[in-house]
Image (tube, rainbow, N blue to C red; front, side, top):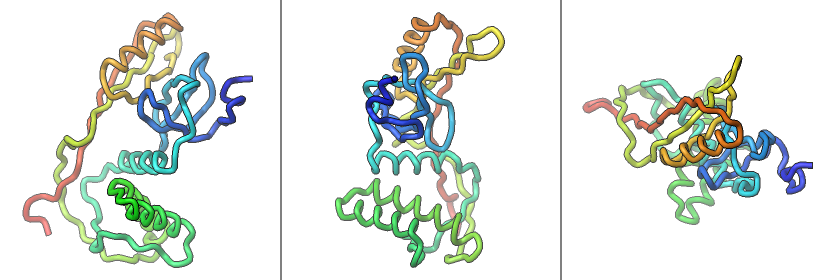
Length: 212
């Protein structure tokens, strides 16, 4: 019986990994490590089983917003005339997101307020506005600029193997040193020597000058 079963964490549970400061879905064990997958999909990474714990509601909400932002790839985006989305009466999901926004506003949590509004707007667009629009949209051109307020991410992926890649991944890390530490540990445990490394930063879209 594994430590995760004994501690009550089951496959599919959303957990927090303090080493990488990331939230992911617990998938199972990979040798001595816990295997986690980012919310919304992506490469899995290994975490220390004794350090992970179930994610809080706030941590899960922020991770879901981050995953939703990563899936956005269009350069022209519909902008709501009203900055604060309104829930549809009688919709349980709308009520949940609106309640989270009200709680964040009550504790003066600007980040939580924004995250809840983003999730509510995404839910409205997907489940309500697609067949019965509730707002008037306008389309404006955007410029892509680097987001200096967000930390870049570093990641390593083990490509050692005779016929197929090992597939183990460090998961997003906040510094090159953290990735290198994972590489050394993985090589110690597996004797694998070849890795693919990547660097990711964040970008924001800003309306072009003069756009209406």
